[in-house]
Image (cartoon, rainbow, N blue to C red; front, side, top):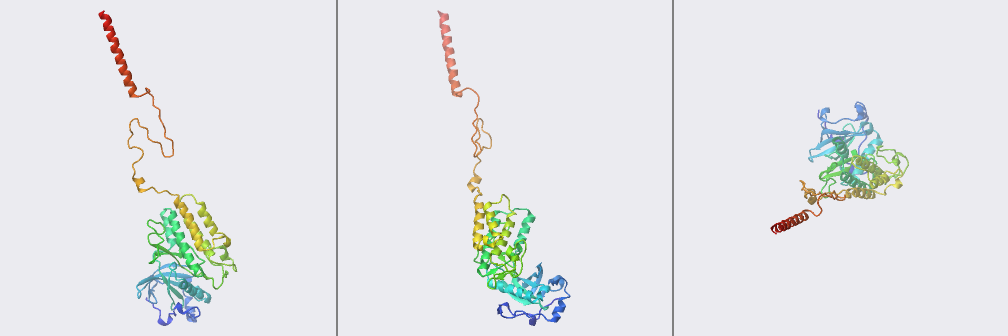
Length: 390
């Protein structure tokens, strides 16, 4: 059954500013209706009989998290694909939960960088739950790419890791310059999209993580903190595997170095998928970035990126790639052995000299000796003939 939201149920735009009431609180009837929804997240897809949200045609669900579900949808008016992020019911009717959700949209619009997913609008469903209309990254997430690499069994190269490190540094610098700390940097919150016009791609031909015109952007600013409001941790939030220690300490100071910790953890995971010995310089950069004491970390994202990319470049410089001329040159060793010829030794090894047995002097000396013997024999015969005649 097709359902549409009525015009009266759609909220005003998020661009009205932080002082306005962006979305009205649901009434008691709405609160009562939500109790019938198992699991707290209503799934919008054709299998559930719901095909439209506002003017957006829902195509399929992308994923479900603890506080929201994300769907792939089509905007028939603008003829584009978008992502709809719908707040879960158990959070949507909590005033603080709703406010954090709307704050996420405001933070994303404030950053407005090619390195962050764009937010197009904020609205609400007939049952009162808010949703965001976001840029859709059709190429998935960095987590999807890592999973594909692990499944395929092909190791990453230093170039693959370098591409991600460089892109992450640019993305973190972009949000930190605008006074925002993400606080939840992890592979599933890093999207892959085509490079926008005027920006060089992060991918490269033959890349195993980022290919051709791939471009990384950050998404999910639900835990982001605007540093202009407070620079102290007010709640312990984040993903434990990537969370800086200070994020778990309520009242502790926090800044962009918390994101540097998480980004270092991401890169360290990627390095585990490469082959060969671990480079001490790269290890030192990541170790500094993941220091428990934030004062020991790199001071900002640009410094972190420069140090890490420089260390990774030092690894690449030690790899000697044969030139095209070398690759096509004739082999030093002949294809078939030449009689009495000794092949040259391998590079870096002394050439082995073989002393052969036989007559010293070679064939020339033998010829001279044979000729001398013939002359002596002739002389002896002449003398014998002369003696006999006398």
